[in-house]
Length: 347
Image 1 (cartoon, rainbow, N blue to C red):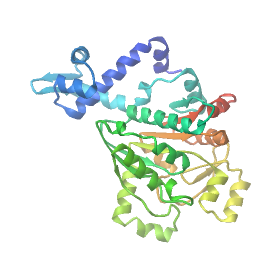
Image 2: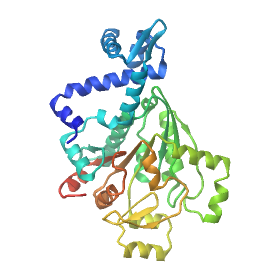
Image 3: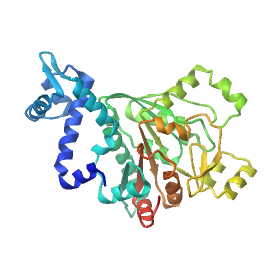
Image 4: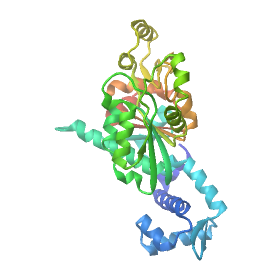
């Protein structure tokens, strides 16, 4: 267990104070110089409470209070940079979530509680959407942010749950993380990212080209201004939203030739992400040339949030966890998935 987890258990109130002061530093950085009254309004805090917090920050030499308003000091700006890079430490996890994160070897896991009865799937989808938006509200910086988004039914469902609250104090740009694949146009990455932009009041860049193209076609396409712009945006994203798929289903959806599907089967691939088909041990056995982000790009993106629901994806999730960048990957799963992963050892 790391130091932050120990602090969470021993002095949970320290995490509340830390998150409040982190938010104050973020807001000052985004609006400096800013007066106390304006800052209190932006943060929806009383001026009295804010005065107590800002006086502490001033005593710690993290902010400077000038006639024009409050500004960050160099020390405060450096601290904010370091905290922003480790935003997962500022979000509390339950005991089971920490156990799951430890077993999967990633920074953060959020388990969405299981519901039963009529409208079960609708309630689960809403809970997943609420959980992901809450995470994004914590990890995305104030001001400008770029979110790269893949397609699929899971992501399309997520998109419909986002709200404009995510754009509060932020200018969001959504961009597809890949070209189009087979299936309904509604679940294509461009459609999903456009819906997220619409729901949050953000901007959107399209990438209406096939994900899988020949090498001869790929090079000229990259010279097209609209395509090169979208590619550049996705590679500079602050956060990536995606899911992990079943190898057989994704192979068929991508329209692979029968011999390629047979190869994937013979190699015992069980999961797919970013055009890579991988085995239970995390070995990539087949890779598609694609227009969009590649698995190797995840190391340069500050945060990536993978939403995995449905017990049929458990094996794919455990295998993918062996490939994912450990310090930058966050998983959001339903309780059924979590229970199955926790019932046996992973890496």
